[in-house]
Amino acid sequence: MAELIKPRRLSPGDTVAITAPASWVDKEQVKAASLYLEKIGLHVRLGETLSMQYGYLAGTDEARAGELNAMFADPAIKAIICARGGYGTGRIADLLDYELIRANPKIFWGYSDITFLHAAISRFAGLVTFHGPMLIDLGKDEVHPLTVQNYETLLHPSVLRYTEAISPLQTLVEGEAFGPIVGGNLSLIVSTLGTPYELDTRGKLLFIEDIDEEPYRLDRMLNQLKLAGKLADAAGILIGDFNNCVPNKRKVSLTLEEIFNDHIVSAGKPTLSGFKIGHCSPNIAIPMGLRARMSTYEKVLACMEPGVEA
Figure 1 (spheres, rainbow, N blue to C red):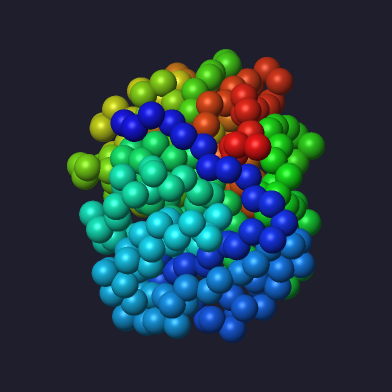
Figure 2: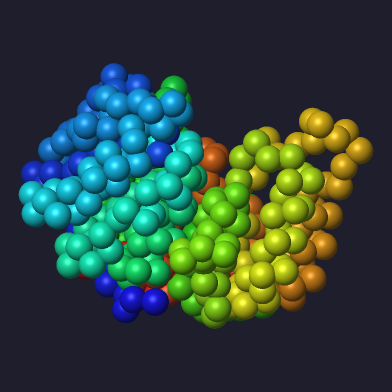
């Protein structure tokens, strides 16, 4: 694991680059959503992958990885925001230049399929990255104010403190834990197992979320995490939103609560659920790799410092 480094905060007039490292995206939708970034005083540069399509991907692996490497190398670009998730980030992990990324630390922002890149960049570059709403989320109807406000933290750094003022939190296992936040989309976390980018949960706060997965699939994925030792190794567990994870193929099903009880509660680590982080509204941004404290007694997740350098 590389030693932890943080990117610098943004200032008015800085340039942020928009890229599509996973699935293809509607460029016009991106242009409309990027107006918000310009409104808060940032210059926006649109990547070429926003106009590419290779099946369900935004261009070939070489094109997507090459653009991301070039954006990290470009000193004029101060932040990189992913336009959307989808599929395919694991295909480019071997093509990224992690020494280049570490030598040019800057804000990297996204979630869902971007989880694989968060894990890879953390392991080999040591850079704090941000699990936050995609740019196209800003272009949706009736965007929650808290989702939009996430982007303001790029200019005005603050220390994350998630309490029940944001959403109700439920205690699954009592306790308090400290450690860096890791994780993201459960499907993508599992896809790192057995690869050089395997998520390391030792002494860390493991965050999980997902969308549109049937309970039997979540059961299988959590069982795989358990068998891989990832739940036992974690200092604490944070459960985000599991949007539309309902039985369709198999109507006779375990509930999510039963699945969490069988795999997560049985691990015995302090666990809070109910975080509005992931495929939900609002979608609160969290710094990945940054040390934080969770307490089921206070119902809080609190980082120890800002995710960016002043």
